[in-house]
Length: 302
Image 1 (cartoon, rainbow, N blue to C red):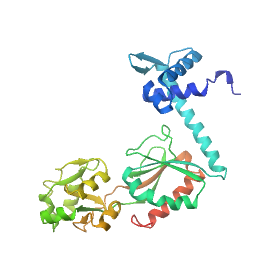
Image 2: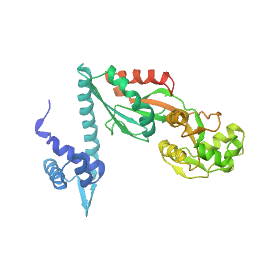
Image 3: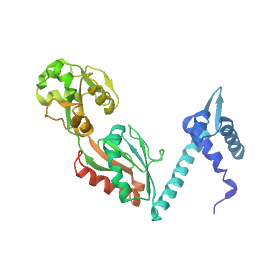
Image 4: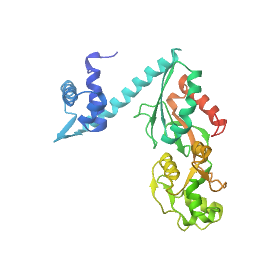
């Protein structure tokens, strides 16, 4: 039997969980669209209800007490379950629902979002929210139903559905190619190589593939995302190694040219990842089936 007298107000619980997650009253206030004083008051009310301190207040910072740390972890799980239960009921209602998706920024902008019109036409009453994430995360701590992941098919507590591999080719602007007389893979050993910070050995791997000594393969400015490297290449800053399907627009317009058709195919790939607890959710299944069909057409199709 549920003892309602033990349940604090939901607003107080949300204020505490958010402040605990950020270890900051001000950041919690910003997320909840409240004032700092309102969040502080709600946390104090919760502490009074529990009869114990949940935070140590150190100048402008808050630090969880031992009790606060345990309570925050338990509460976070309970709130996630409540959110999941609510979304599951919405999904089973037959009147649409909400699907929260985390994607890699460039893949989302250049490959996924241009295709979402088809999904919307097939599921007009489904609301799909898309956010950017570049690293794996804990589905129990984040409000996502699924994510598109690049790497190995390993994600704790989740199912990984294969989407596609990349075909990575060297590209640059036509003016950069003409300026440096780039005609063979060997010519690339003498120009500025644009690097992606998350794939530091990619140029070295490509040079080994084409049989060229990769002596300068690790040199060059580093960029965090493919979209940044693509723009740098278009701007004539150097040569870049990019997945062909992510720069189709630039190749079609002539803003970039492929310097060699010898493509690097990394062992890592793209996967749709979703928690095991959501594997039977109708919205997750519908999106998975649609996305797998899109990927099966080939990275550049759709």
